[in-house]
Image (cartoon, rainbow, N blue to C red; front, top):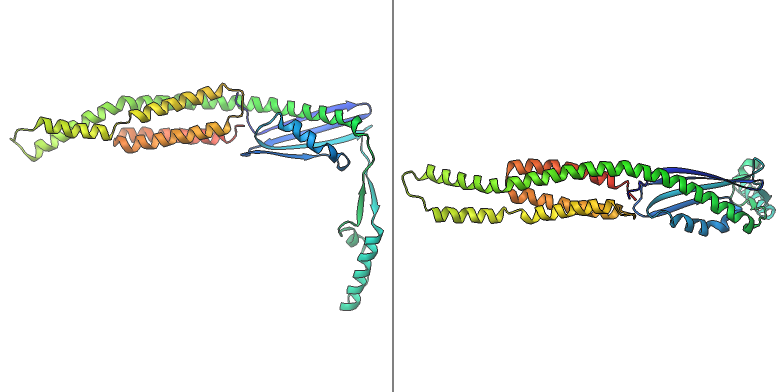
Length: 293
């Protein structure tokens, strides 16, 4: 099953008079990167909530934000003035003013911008009481996110199937063209010899030998077989219920390698033209794969 890495989800959960609200967004990323934002006095729950998220999502940048309201009001925070530190700041500011003949007036807002002037004193909470609320609301937000990821994934999968069909048609076209290339080479070779040495008997065995050498050099049977195998494997991956992005990206690299070899070995303008179209479809596939978990 294809899942998109870009989505949005939201969850709400009530526990008594306390309301938990969670929002989550996921973005493209090569690895799993979880950014969790919860009130500071609940930071002890950080690891277990991240474990919950990582058990549901395999790949992407996931941003989850949770806040709490009690009777419609956000949980209170307590701030305390760090008096000893403020005294030290004021002392050093007076020293600077005297030493460099500066204005001794100290603005309150300037002091508040200095590090650790205000101390955060979190409200004491019963973690065992709020833990279920955090777990439920995060699960709800991830459920909502997953629904959107699956829906987006269905659209991506439909696009994959369309482009795989096109690629298979191109491979069949190249396969049909390959024997004709050898025959056309034999005819061109014979015509050139006829033009250069008229009225001289041709050595058909020598011509046959040259054609055989050309056929061996331009044989693309292996590349066609491997390309078809990779395309089949791509379709099989689409049926798997797993994180597929990296595997599909690797398969596209392998298909692209075979297609490049097709072009260089075939030495044919029509095959080269088809190869250009195949590369264009592969590039579109590659761009879409970057959105897949």
